[in-house]
Amino acid sequence: MKKIFNFTVTLAFMAAILAGTSCTDVLDQQSVDSFNEEVVFSDINLVKAYLGACYSMMGSKNTLQQANDGVLGLHRDMLTSGTDQTLGSFRPANYVHLKGTMSPDQLGYFANDAHGGWLRWLNLYNNIQNVNTILARIDDVPVSNSSEESLRTQIKGEAFFIRALMYTHLLLIHGGVVLSDHPWQLDDDFLSVKRSSIAETKDFILADVAHAIEFLPETMEQGRATRGAAAAVKSRMLLFCASKLTNGGYEPDNELVSFPAGSRQALLEAARDAAKDIIDGKYGAYALVGNTAEPSLPLSEARIQEYTETFFNIFNQKGAWNSETIWGIQYPLKDGRTNQVNLWNGPNGYHNFGNNAPVEPAVRAFEMADGTPFVWDADDPANDTLRKATVAELAANPLLSPYNGREARFYATILYHGAPWQERPNDAKVYDQYNRIQSGHFYNMDGSIARMGVDTRQGPIDNWNGTKTGYYLKKYLDPETEGQYYNNTNAWIEYRYAEVLLNYAEACIELGGDNFQPGLDALNLVRRRAGLPGRVTTDQETARTWLRHEREIEFFGEGIRFWDLRRWMIFDQVVENVYGMRIKEYLNGDMEWKLDYNDNEDSRTWGGDKFYWLPIPRDEVNKAPQLQQNPGYN
Image (cartoon, rainbow, N blue to C red):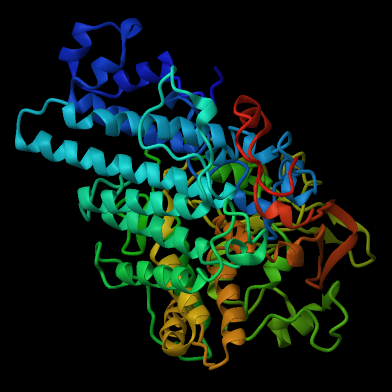
């Protein structure tokens, strides 16, 4: 008999659960080396600790003790570097879908526990097994008072939430998958297990979300599931299901990856309604942070800074979450979850690593502060390479710098040459007295180099690290944390209200008719919060383009673009080689910015439509040959 899943709960995992509970009477009764499932389900507080470990395992690893390299999307190598937005400097070859090398035997990032393991088939099913065990036994756990009874109900709701989230990840990357609402046993007939259709998988998730909403409260301890969190899972999943990819875009007759013909209208309506329920406050009170009134243009530098700080601080929350956060992961210093995003992504001139660096085309996608598109060279549209400006020209027209006059989200998301940042560590202060990013080099007036920028890969500090693109990802960095020495404590926001608004906007725009204007209104709320003017159109294709642009900018670096590029089926339109932006700052203040097409930092290739779906890993198919592989893979 063969096994599909490795669902063994290790001794280390059990020990971690025990270490996190205060039930000393239970611990006195049984030693760790004889710990077993019966002990867990004899005490409601032990079950809660077991559930807490299931939250931590969403980071990817199979034990709580190993889940210390980020949870969900906040890892050293982020999902955003599997898109056209950033470059994973250390392991670019791991993003196999951008290399044309993805196969059932080579899943790269998606099989690496330390980085993309939160999307790995094996790890997702390990956690499904754990929550299935909870759901199978929770009603029999003894309780002695109404408080414990409420806790038991809450745990049940959280388990349904986690299972819905795990299956949502499986659907988003594989389509229809193996469904199970009970814990697998070693004597089960695994050779009879088959993948369900994508439609059946969607319905299974919706049922779990409904149960989670039934059993969960609107508010909880931060980091634990709520009714709103479950509804947000539903919103993201349904919008994916309503996409081109799953409705005839690829293998339309394959029920594992496509819905039956004629399904899209109903799916779009379901996606619209799921988002609208959250907007209407059905599951709790959520709202965008900041001013959503139409901005009075032109914005002053002070007003742009206000909008910038509002947006940046959404991702730098450490205490009570703001009104926009629906659900995320807490990173207090006292527990096993570790967030070192300052170290991973911060500039190397601060002894950080400079990973997940924004690439030039993505940086250019940010608008100007007045809402007009950024243009590299209006006088020479064919030039996408070189900009120059003397110090006198910059004084007369600051917009000659590509980094001046941009929208607030640009300044909240990107660290560029000249951007203000933290106070330098002592050994770097001699190279930078003004605490401004140096991702370019400094030159004498005769063209000879005066010194290397401290945040470049040729600089005097940690020159084996640092950006390869000329930029650093500012979003999720904490100005108060020295990444060289300390972990971050700001939260990872997995679901926020802005996504719900843009989910609603997209579904409405795609539906058209009477839905069109409400969708555009929702899009404009997100734009105006960023200090940008609202959009006006009656043309669906124009609105679709605007909507996709808004999602690209609003969610930059958060990983959502990976799902968007796949469901829109436009990866082939955006995958291109990554080249370095090379900057010269002359000692008199003259500037030169050059996208160097001789400096190929990462060669990328889109391997065709089959890459829109990840294959089932080879070792899983070997264990269960009856599992049908995704189309295009052998």
